[in-house]
Image (cartoon, rainbow, N blue to C red; front, side, top):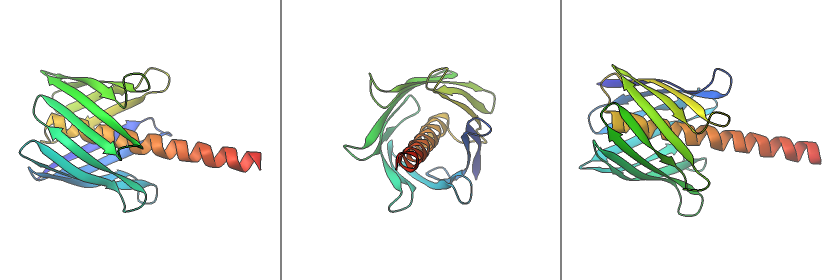
Amino acid sequence: MSELNGRIGGVTQGYDLHANWNGERLDGRIGGTFQGKDIKLTVRAGDVDGRIGGTFAGFDADGDVTAQSVSVRLGGRIDGDDVHLQVSGDRVRGRFSGRLDGKDIDLHVSGDRLHGRIGGIVEGKDVNLTLGGVPVEVAALAAACAYKALEDQQAHDASAASSNNGG
């Protein structure tokens, strides 16, 4: 069994990512024991589907994954984000969410590491993962899932803070 391990984001504003890969299924955890989400993705014949989080506080993953590209919808039709990636050599590049309101994804493979950034210099998050035998395209998708989970949590925290201050 292969293992994917690392971190998305910084030391204080980030999530750990730990998951096992059996060649068809990625199972693990984004974040910690109390603040985080389970990740369960199944990849069969280029099709990926799964769930990040629980029944109520989570989002679905559905789309296509090949060794050359990732095209996946995270979340629902209305309240969701698209992930489009191109895998070429030691680079993984693409977009998270939309063309206008989205974030760039720029990742590099160095040996057994996948590292880089999702988003820009100011509002983006670092990606630093050890692949441990997990295919690059699956690891890049898991990084995008962790990024969405982290962004969703930060948006929720900001909303809760503003409603507490305003009322």
